[in-house]
Length: 161
Image (cartoon, rainbow, N blue to C red; front, side, top):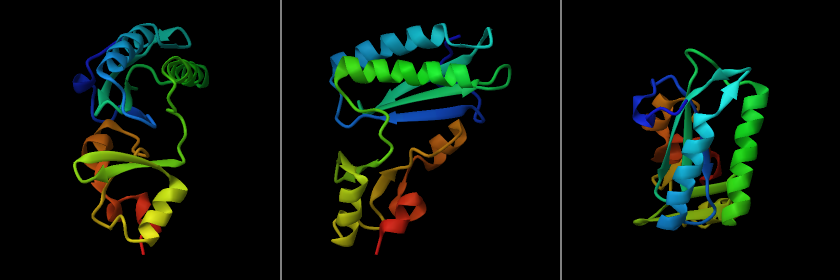
C-alpha cells in the first residue's frame, strides 16, 4: 500500500539507495512512477506493506516502511532489492554499492569511492565539517535528523586525520 512518505511515522524503517550519478528530471519521473507502482503491490506474507518513498537531490531513493501493521520479511526485502536492481539495469546506474561516499563539495553533491574519500581525507580535501550523507540511518526519525551531517558526526569520522 502506497503512503505519502511525509505521513509515515518517525519509527518507520528506512532504506537509502544512492546513485553513482545525478539522475535527470526525466529519469526521476520514471523512477517515481516505477517505485509508486512497486510499493502499491509490495507485500509480506500476503499482507500489504504501508510504504512511501521520496527521491532527493536527483540522486537518492529513500523508501520508508511503517512496520506497525506488518514488517518486511526476507522475501519482501528480496523483492525490494530485485526492484532496485531493475532500476539499476534500466537507468544504467549503481544504487546498491555501499562502498561509496556522497558528500557536499561546496554547493554540489560529490560521489566518490570509499578509497578516494579516504585519500581525500588524508590530503585534507575533506574536513570534519564536510557534510556527508549517512546512508546507515535506520528510521525515518534518524533520516530526518542524522542523514546530512558533518563527517565528524558520522561513521565517516574514522577516515579523518
